[in-house]
Image 1 (cartoon, rainbow, N blue to C red):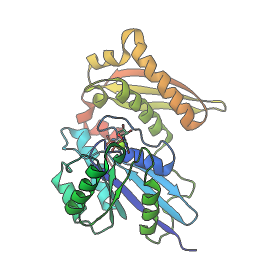
Image 2: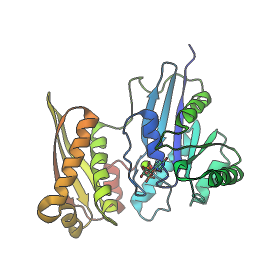
Image 3: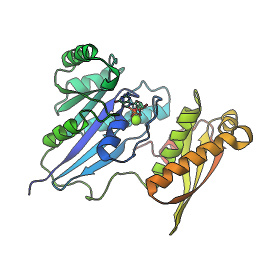
Image 4: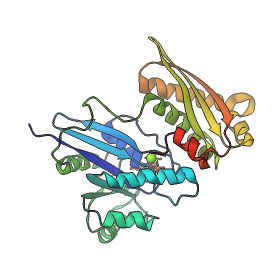
Length: 293
Ligand SMILES: Nc1nc2c(ncn2[C@@H]2O[C@H](COP(=O)(O)OP(=O)(O)OP(=O)(O)O)[C@@H](O)[C@H]2O)c(=O)[nH]1
Ligand SMILES: [Mg+2]
């Protein structure tokens, strides 16, 4: 029997819906999704296995001009996604003008591999706007096949999926057929907590936070986890904890609920907050948190 397999890498501006699309394809919440830009910080694999195919999707951070070391590392993940792609998915959203980074944009328009340009969030547009934008993207990225989709509502998602399958090269699988991702369990604990922080705290707070899950002990009935929320300054620590610990408590309760769903098991989650000065600019620390490949 013929078998197809390949890497399908999703890139685009922040907040356009890349993670929403990957989760829709995989059918699991592998990537966290929020209304804030720079939600995704890593390259996360989501693997869809069929009898005669293996589609290895990569969700990547939204493209930005890096201002500090963490963001540099995030853009290295995007660069790596150009290098091993068999199919490139360039996602844009309705109303978007262009990719802020000229170098990345040139890589897309001069790509030798198939490019699918997905114009997302069309549930927010009308027919006239849609037609204009499809036309304009067709001129800007002539080498791409364009699909107008809504990742959130599942509109045209199946069609894109089927087209990707057609484009996958003949190849044996790269990963075991029961594997869903390349990330360990602790990664999903970190991300679930970070999602709650993105949702509940304002301004720079979520961007100054990193999570490290120090303990992940699976027992028969329950998984026991202990995670540290790192911030860059003492004042941020106070904000995370909140009045009498109320803000931190909310993060803990909401994260635990999601983790119980994700792991299908009862979860005990202990959270504490620690100041880790300038971790975002420290190569050694970033490496420890998995930002250097
Ligand atoms: N209306 C609408 N909203 C969408 C659609 N797809 C995604 N969104 C919303 O757009 C926001 C960003 O979605 P994400 O999937 O986190 O976007 P992303 O591109 O992964 O963002 P970064 O990781 O920050 O680069 C969320 O609030 C989503 O619910 C869509 O098709 N329609
Ligand atoms: Mg994302």
